[in-house]
Image (cartoon, rainbow, N blue to C red):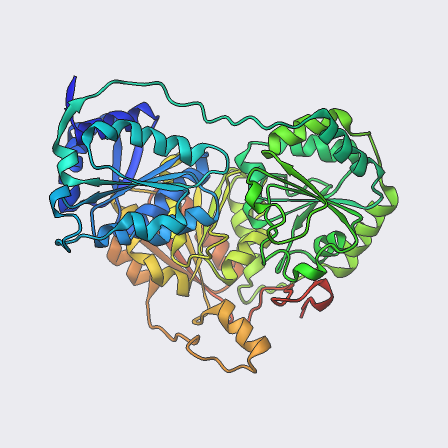
Length: 554
């Protein structure tokens, strides 16, 4: 059947299983939006307040479901407004297809109105990108985009489509969705060799990251841990892969991780790293990281092996293939002396914040969120102190429930991501945890949740400062608070009401618990302002370039 390029685009999206697209219209994508109008029964389009919000929403949709998120923008500023969202997805290995319109092919390269070379701009922050010059190529290019986004290590792919291609006619022929399962050649010899190292270990520790969640390997990881009695610590990207109350779960590792978890890694004689990349927020000083351990590194991306840390035993594989493959070679083992030592560290070293009934403490805010919501609640965060407090105290027990920008550290990520997660999971609560600095970045997306009646609850930890930067200024810059004391006069209750949402304010734990319980009954977006002290710190903290020996706990 003859179809124009825009109709072919819709057909391929449906073919690929896409049910929702986040975007913002403009001149170069008018034909696509006309096709979306005609096909609104097949694909739901969510218009955000800003293209960056659309990119973050597609990202949040992908993180909450494991499916590919899709966003759409027009040429020029529309396309460039996607860049931060694309980079955020790239750094955290999130599958996304970003579709941009461009000026017609006769106008390309002539500095035409709203023309940018978005393929060149995004080349360093995508797995691949395409510029479609002929309608005959369009369907297969789009299929390739979805295949690449999901094969191996996931990531964003950009497809740039000139306006005349969206109007040109061509025959559409359906094709089956490509199989993106990748085989990894793990020989028996490799598995036996790695298992022998683990079986001989006296102080083994697992350090795992988002690659375990991406691979759907939660159960395989737990079986591995329990058979060999190996405790495991996780990065922020893997929160929820293990239950928070699992005895072998050491919890968060890294700069703001538990001291006991960081100490266990430091003292380990074998470190099994699975689906993690030794980022500078974990291996804060590479030369002093796990120096007593033989390091096994399992990663889907060969480029990560020996990139940040020298590895003793590299294994290129997805997490699930490795964990299921090695299990028969593992001996059923116990390490009672090692586990007793870890329990001593937990009881003596781990930071315990002070409680208060008269003022709001960050950990109490998170405790109340956990208390008042069910365990399938999704927590989406922005970036800063509130993000770390959420990571430390959110107690997620299932994968895909903690949505946060890790590698890029994108302030303003949270609300768009919360929208994407809520659209993807309409039967689950979504709590957006943010700070006053981050919230001001993209608070415009509040109008999106109002328009679509999304019951997102935003909890603002308001300390009137850029808290994480101020914390560094306190510790390392002799309290020279350069441009971090905001003193903004924003009335968040009136702001929420002006957007058509519900606004609440609280200053004590009792008030916040009452506000949360009320917010859960509203059925629409709610903003809760929580006033916290500007001198609250995220602790523990290992300084950049430091090691566990330099940890700050007060």
